[in-house]
Length: 219
Ligand SMILES: C[S@@+](CC[C@H](N)C(=O)[O-])C[C@H]1O[C@@H](n2cnc3c(N)ncnc32)[C@H](O)[C@@H]1O
Image 1 (cartoon, rainbow, N blue to C red):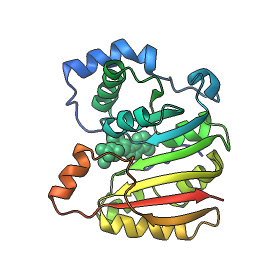
Image 2 (image 1 turned 135 degrees about the horizontal axis):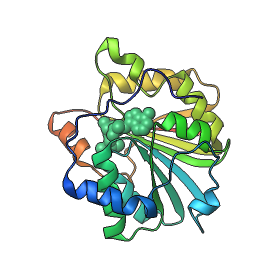
Image 3 (image 1 turned 180 degrees about the vertical axis):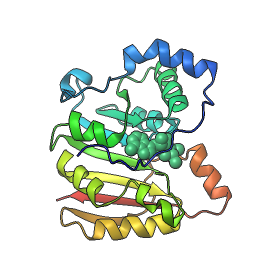
């Protein structure tokens, strides 16, 4: 599927720090994977990783690094368009020395649609996708029928999609959208011990937001 004309992200101003620009410029060629129209060969991107999980919308990449450290056998394809976060995640990969994270800078719809082979992913992480609370913006929510269909195509049978949100109306929306899919089974789960608390989530909790985790298995 091509990138939808209505984007699920909003490129926010230019509040990127000098350190993030420096990290992005210096480390992209080492830990970044360029967007092209070629299908990725995961065995070249991640040598010696038996499983591949795509994280869509990693933000500042806090969860990415923590999870990657606890699952060294998995290669993590970290996708976002947020430039400060790209710089930050690249510098955290260097600082921590994690070997199993690679960064991509493009709309996830395009990356999955063009560069990821069908039935090749072992999982997708979607943590705190933008909730787009206003009714007129609901069309921007990344979870919709087309996106679920795209995930279904790219995941292996038995692979899982893990989603977390701190916006209750979005949780209801997510549940309703997956309920109409015949390819996924699952629903609300307890917060998994492997999903770390990020600053973003902490801020939501401070505002009394209730966090919901979902796990869906591709049948
Ligand atoms: C609300 S933030 C959450 C960040 C992070 N997952 C966390 O928990 O802190 C959502 C992120 O998703 C990214 N995003 C939204 N739609 C995207 C898309 N289609 N492709 C890539 N990234 C996307 C945004 O740029 C943003 O950084």
